[in-house]
Image 1 (cartoon, rainbow, N blue to C red):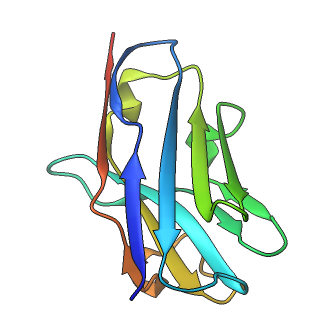
Image 2: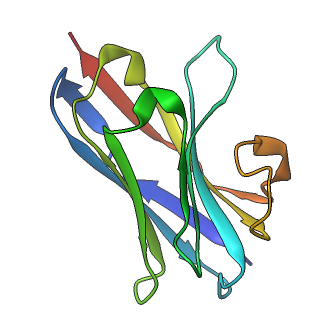
Image 3: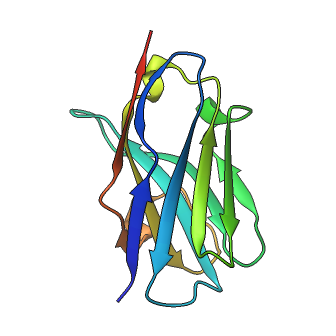
Length: 125
C-alpha cells in the first residue's frame, strides 16, 4: 500500500525558507511523477511543482519559479520542496502526491492516485 507522509511545515516570516519532505513507501516509484499541491481554506487546490521520479524532470507553477526547488532522493524514497523567499500568499496546507506515468497532466490534481495528509505552512508578513 502506497503511503506518502509530509513533514517540515511550520511558521516562518516573509523572506524566510522552509524545506518540506515527503516520505514515500509501499512500492518503487520508477515511472512515476511526484507532485506538490497546496490548498488554502476556501480556495481551490493549486499545483506547485512536480518531478519525474526516474528522470528528474521538473515543473513549476509560475508564482514559485526561482523561489522553490523540487527534488527527490531515490535512495531515501523521499521528495523535497525547498521554499525560499517565502511570501504570505504561500501560506497553505501542502500535500504531496504521486501518479503513474510521466506524460502531460502533471499539474492536474485529478490524475494523481496517491496523496499525503498535508503539512501546514504559515508565512507571516
